[in-house]
Length: 542
Image 1 (tube, rainbow, N blue to C red):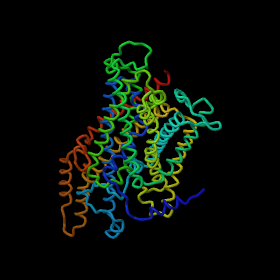
Image 2 (cartoon, rainbow, N blue to C red; image 1 turned 90 degrees about the vertical axis):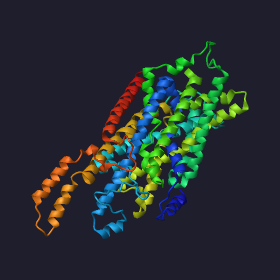
Image 3 (cartoon, rainbow, N blue to C red; image 1 turned 30 degrees about the vertical axis):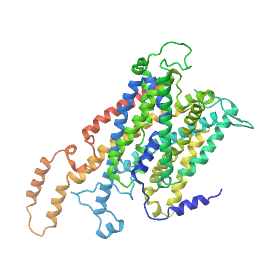
Image 4 (cartoon, one colour; image 1 turned 90 degrees about the horizontal axis):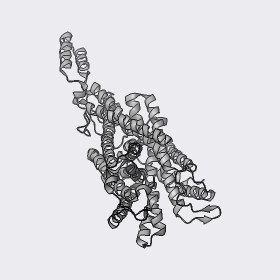
């Protein structure tokens, strides 16, 4: 095997300069990470739950996801402040060698640095211990590998269904080959699908070995093309709804007038249960936040940055779910792009056929942008677990860069192998959505509360008594220590409780960062998780 490219990558990163990107590139990094393959199942979820109920559920879940994303950044800032404080307690020469910003106990520095990254695995260890870190790593590895797996199946199934394969025992798959089955049954179709998966692997594995700053132009391009794809889908369905108000369009065998109000306001509890994990899966960002925000230079804008990302995805999902579900109705596929196979093959309009082929093929290419982002997140967390430091410090270890690249290679190959044997996207998303709820909600909530309390203890809690004791013991004069201690006790008694103390406040906080607000969101997260578990039971029995 030729490893010239691997040695080139290692040499490329030999410098000490920290790569960075602007807000626009960072925005498309996050959009590509969040949207991934999740948007393909949103119209199906809207149709099953009812359009209005699906939209309301999406808005609630997006609001929770936005807040928990901010809390991840706040936790990173507190971890940075605690690390700076520990270094500031060292001897001045040692602190200068480490190069940390010296801070005092009363003036903590909560600014996130570009040259230091706290992955969620490291945050779990800092605030909850090593066991929690390992539990998190197992959860993270499963869900992100399933996400890469879903990207691979989308590409393989779309290419095998639409590309004109006809050589040897490899033939194009029929339109319904991937519906309701874990793997297509025709033998020649299986060969075509696996051939497409291998082609996809040749594209995404090299991308997974590049740093984010080295693929920023590709991510921006694919992000723009993703918006164009959604615009094509929305335009197609809107034009059809306007030109055919009855909503038949050859999809129904009857000529009955279709009542759109029924479709808009209908509610199916079983369908709504199914929509919860699907819609939650479409807003998963949190495990990638440390890696995605690390190269962004203007970190003071992260709070508004996340708001823009989640508003954008919510509007995108709502318009997609509304129009696609209203047009295709009961014929809607679990992967919405498969509904355009018929227009692509049988439409009399050349422009419509070209648009339909673009809608079918591009999402399978577009997931090539999500795969490396997800893969880098898995490998970075595994690197922390193995090496004990984050990947920004890989150059300080003899084999740090090589280990990082090998981990990325392994994490890229595993989902490719899994996709060779199971192709059903709904089967994957159903369980990935449930695990995603824990990643999006429970870990950020737990880290937010614990980091707030720990910073209160260090920067705003009992430190005054320690200062009094130190000043009294270091003074050569006779000091009335009982008097000082009584004064410290009185100050402590009048000091507000930790949930009202601003010692844990960071520049990235919002009005919902208060501990009591976090507890309210914890109740909502338990509600969402309970319904997601119930949806698995419904789907398994029904």
